[in-house]
Length: 78
Image 1 (tube, rainbow, N blue to C red):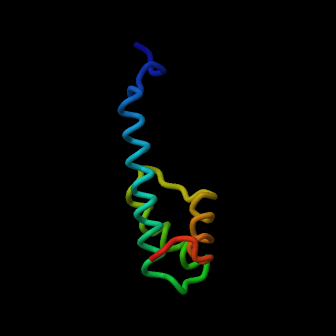
Image 2: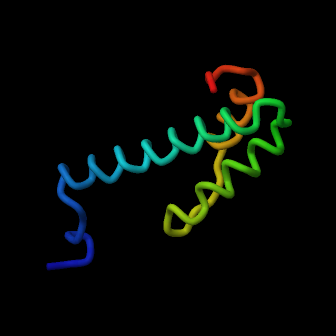
């Protein structure tokens, strides 16, 4: 067996992605509920704080900024 053959099966991969999406969704709703009057930078920082310890090698990407902007725009109910 080679290193290229070591990977999660499709069912496990789908569960991992679903779990990651759920963690992101929970963080977005938590920040929307608790930081309704925050700036985009404040919402972004809070999202990163909530997410950084939930993922191995976490690096904030454009999605986190997109959700921070959406929180400030009131796109998520509290």
